[in-house]
Amino acid sequence: MADDPAFQTNFPALLKLLADDDPNIVASARAKLLEYGEQAIAPLEAALKKEKDPALQKKIEQTIREIRLETVTQEWQGFSSLPDDKLDLEKGVFLLAKVSYPGMDAKGYGRRLDEIAHQVRSRIRPSSRLKTQLGILNDYLFKQQKFKGNWDDYFDPENSFLNRVMDRKLGIPISLSVLYLLIANRLKLPLKGVGIPGHFMLKYEGEGGEVYLDAFNEGRFLTRSECIQFIVEAGYPYQPEFMKGVGDREILARMLRNLILIYIDRQDELMERVFTRFLNHLTPVDDSDSMGGATGLVSEETPEDPFE
Image (cartoon, rainbow, N blue to C red):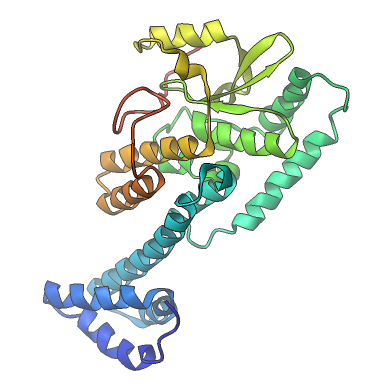
């Protein structure tokens, strides 16, 4: 909401109510501060620096966090309401990251993606075949820049936030695939996401038919039959739609399901609730898993290497 001229007058009283022992009074004060939105953050941060009472410090920190979460949730709601052809995967993944990293510089990470694409472009001959170009991208991303799958701590939520994937050079199949896809888009390489159950991948249709690419395993190339073999061996009844390309909305929905399951396991009810709201805004009519064939929340990724 726009700055309220009464806010400065009301803020000291609200801060005092936030310190009350009555949880109902505290809830009312917090609700009012949430109504004021982002204009309440700076005064709350200033109060937090001065405050000596650990209990009140915790209440202030929680209030700041909830205001920021509400702000990004409203931004996500507007983003989600766009038609599929207007959704932007890059904007979406950085909005997800803002939930945990509100001060993140999305434009700065975009420039880093631009630079990676520039470095790869300088190594590619225009006449090169598509698979050769992807091999050059693989070499730069996984050999030179050392991006890799996080086998050691697979269910760390940082593996799902693209800013942290780029900072730590660690991710899971879907986040590394998104990173790869955003770079490929800049290079005008025609890749699509493929939501194979348990292991998100990429594919292209070029010389010789379809080729699948596993970003979690350093861009390994796979045939359709190898992917089908994995699906069957993993215990899923094979369905041809598993191999179809998916759009940005489906990719973001899958990332959200992963995050919800992670925070359920961690018993972080606030983060679970926020990402559930995100998913409901993104897929309000039918939350069926178009990439796994199951309805509701299912485990989208597995730490097992499906191709060993």
